[in-house]
Every structure is written in structure tokens, then in C-alpha cells.
Image (tube, rainbow, N blue to C red; front, side, top):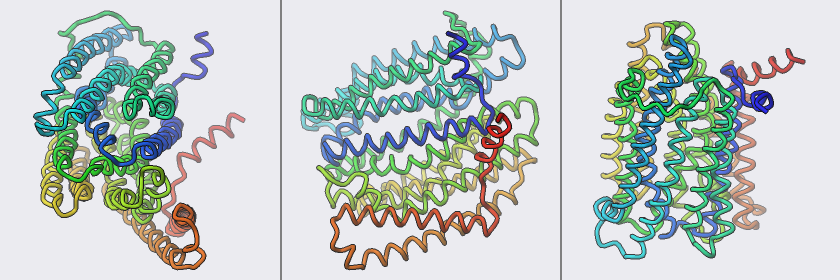
Length: 530
């Protein structure tokens, strides 16, 4: 049995790992859009979806800050160092101590948060909410707190697997969560309303743990009941994670402030923002986070061995690949924001007014796509050299700018101000990252990434002009005006995406900035084996 499992769940090289994670992230994100479509169809952008989104905010904040804040920044480098410099047994005991202490603390915190959730809701949103709305927020929050305990365990398992360069289970785990929410809403929306999504999420979280647990049995990791809080490795993980915990706390603070501001906006405003945010997350997850997830263990390994030539190569290669995919995705999404929202979410209880509001938010969000994708890469580049404070200071600056802009313009722009604030904040942070990495790693070369970025931006903008011209012609034809609204959205989106892809690929070939390296490496490996 172990032989069959290890033939599926095994270590991969960087390019192949990136492809696996990218494909799985693509499918998972598509399923996320399907989840949003089902939710929009049954509940629209309404007080029900607002209650759901408010209810998920606090649990998600705890998991992002306390679990992602640790595993994403310091666990993998320290565990990699233990495996490289000490015995496997010592590394396993350190990882088990970290797992046990973290899970007990996190689970206890979630229980306390669930108990005091009514009081937290009064302080966080506002006192005097209608009783049914407050009770709904509290119930959904409690269900999601249980879900986040499962996610916490799966994130630690995933860190162990990624250190062993096992990415298949990580990829498969992405594919079981959203289908659980979708099935929950389809099967039980009449009986449980919006709560059907929360119950589906809880089942999905448990399935994610199961998939990672199956894979982890095929690695050299062996769990133990160690609880050595004096272990230097575990201490170092927590100490190195402090800046990233603060970093993630700043990010979650942004969403807390957004929800606080939006409570006084028209019903459905916060839900429209969340729908747009999920669309923006689509290309970021596929082309940004997936690449970064796959390359991070290799950056950590390069840094631990002081091999900054390979470190520089991996960073620059990732910058080029991320921009090659995210620049056209972001620009194209901005140009076609109305068509995309109308096509995917329109219908049922999601009408034209909700479509226009969500599309206006997405316009600015879409332009955040390449910047946020690069943010994850640069942050991991600093984490790999065990500098977790610099990304925090940059995030602090960005958060101050973002919240200032969001608050000032929220009265006139509504939730669209949130996406505008993020766009300006991420632009500032990327500039700071580029300058900061050059100072930290002299081997990092600025000229080539800047030249690549300039060429790809020019190709993306020319692509956008072509798409807008085609869209203008289509919008003003009698044939188009005679079609239903959904048919118009489908035609303009389909033709626009097709024209955009063809023009962009052609321009990148002409300007010699096309990048098919990942595909080429995988094809070469397949042909070589054949």
C-alpha cells in the first residue's frame, strides 16, 4: 500500500511542482467562482450574504494571522535547516512539538472566541444590530471557528509536505473544500438558508486534513507527542514568525476596517466587495501564489546554503513568469469587468444594479493582480533569508495608505474605495521591496526585471486597447442589441478574451518577452522519459 501511495505522492522539481500547484489552484479557483455563482444565484448581494461574510471575518483573521503567519514565513526554512543539518528524528521531534503546541493554543483560542462572539460582534461592528442579524453572524462565526481548527492542522501538515517537496496532496486538498460548500448550498439552501454554506465549509475543512494526512504518511515525517517548548527550533519558528504575524494582522485589520465602514453602507455593499475580491484572487492564486508556493522551499534551500546565484535566478525567473501571466490577466479583467461579473454572477437574485456595483469594484481590483502576486514572491524572498521584519514594515506603510484612502473616499465611492486603496498601497510596497531586496542581496539584478516588466506592461496595454476597440464595435451593432443581456455578456467576454490572448501572445513574441519555460521544461522531461 505504501508503494502505491508513494508512486502518487512523491517529491517534485521546481518547474513540475509549480505546474502541479498551478493546475490545482486553477481548478480550485474555478470552483471558488462556481461557489460564488451558486451563492449569488440563491442569495444575491443581500443582507444574507453580508451576514455570511461578516461571520467568516473573525475566524478567517485568526487562522490567517496565527497559522498562516507562522507556517508561511518561518516553519519551512527552520524545518528545512533541521533536515539538512541534523537528523531526521530530531527534525521530526521539533516539528511535532511545534504542531502540538500550536494546535492546543489555537483550538483553545477558537473556543474562547466562539463563547464571546456576541460581545465581539457588538464591539467590532456596532451595538444594536437587529437580533436576527446578530445571531446569524454569531452562528456562522462559530461554525467557521471549528472549520479553521481543521485548516490549522492542514496548514502545518502542508508545511511538512512542502519541505519534503511533496506538492500533490497540497494540490488535491485545494479541490475538496469549495465543492463541499457548493453541495451544501445546492442540497440544503431551502432548509438552512445561508447557513448551508457554513456547514459545507466545515465538512470541506475536515476533508482537506484527510488528504494531507494520507500524503504525510508517505514521507519521512513521523508524528510524536513531544511537547518540548524549550526546543530551539520551535522557539526560532515562533520568534521569526512574529513580524509575519504582525504582517498578517495588518492585512486582516484592513478587512475588519472595511467591514466596519461597510456596516453603514446600503445592504449588499460588503458582499459586492467580497465577490470582486474573489475574482481578483483568481489570477493571483493561479499565477502568483502557486508559483511562490512551489519556489519557496528552493529559495529557502538556496539561502541556507549561501547559494545566492541560484537564489537570484529563482527570484528573477519567478518575477518574469508571474508578470507574463498576471499583467494581461489583470488588465484584461479590468477592461472586461462588467462582462465578467454579469456573465458569471448575473441571474437569479443578482441583478443589473448589483452587477454594475461589483464590476466597478473589480475594475481597480483587477489592476492589483500583478502587484499582489509580486508581493507574495518578494515577501517569501525575504523570508528565505530569514528577514521577516522588512515585509512587515512595508505592509505597515501600505496599510496606513490603504486605510486612509478607503476611509476618505468611502463616502463618495462606496466599496469601490476599498479596491482603489489597495491598488495604491500595493504599488508603493512593490517599489520598496525591489529597492530593499537589492540592498539585502547584492546579487539581485534590477535591470533585467525592470526591462521585462516594461515590455510586458506595454504588451498588456496594447492588448487592452485592442479589446476595448472590439468591444466598442460589438456593443453598437444592431445584432448585439437584439440579443439578451446574458448573450451580450457572453459574446463580448468571449470575443474580448480571444482577441486579447491572440494579441498579447503575438506581441510578446514580437517583442521577444514570451515565457513558456515551465511548459517547455515539463514537455522536455516527458519527451526525455519517452
